[in-house]
Length: 325
Image 1: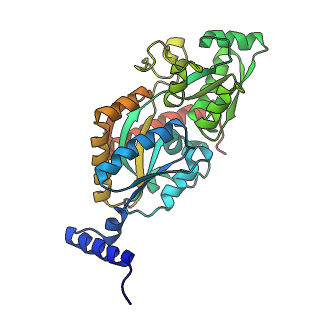
Image 2 (image 1 turned 90 degrees about the horizontal axis):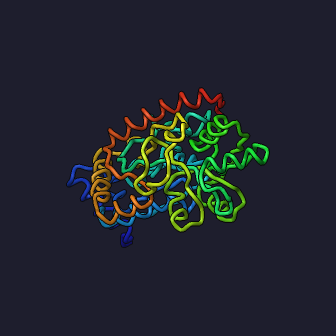
């Protein structure tokens, strides 16, 4: 019986791996790379993954596929990463919520980032923001707060995921201004944006990359950004610090994570490719236009940032009285 094309390719890959001192599994993994995204197509995280994926494909010399696994604020994608083969063929592109916040707000998210993930590389930081729907008459945060007070002090605010940074921001804003703000969780930013654009909800809290395109198009208005510094993409929008809203000074991050046990050679190769990609002028321009502050972090640096960020939010969540579900 003649060998199949697949078996011949596998034999060649194994032979090459042996000649390079690598495992056959690692060589086979290099046939393609899968980028897991924990949110639906059309949102900010998905757009970022596709921008990077296109360039990584050329840099790695192999197909790179973005695979959306929406649900539970990235929990399903995190579980998929844990279950994936540790061969360099799968990475999880995530921001702070799925990796740092979920383990604090859920009793059993199905993964432990410290044990089940390996940081590959960080590539950007960003801030969350408060945005008003196009049909909301207020032009700034104070005017909206005043309008909510005049209407009885209660309003609904969309958030892209339950038990997320945006949810705690809604709670803090409501408490500070004496409002009864109800956080309405969605399965990602895309469906939240659809309801905001359809004026089904008056306001939303999410990442700047989620809002910025429609803000620039005049379809909604970003009225406040978290952190201590105004964003280059939104120079006229005041910060939480300027508005006297405290507790959100530490800005979140974006990074890539691999399954625990992934060979160091595979992690290093992916990290080096990310570093080259985000140095490309067109990539930096696209990501910056989305409201990201682009900057490379090694796997070790990303790991330290994730740990520090989780410690900060552990205190915020505890102080809020939130009980893990």
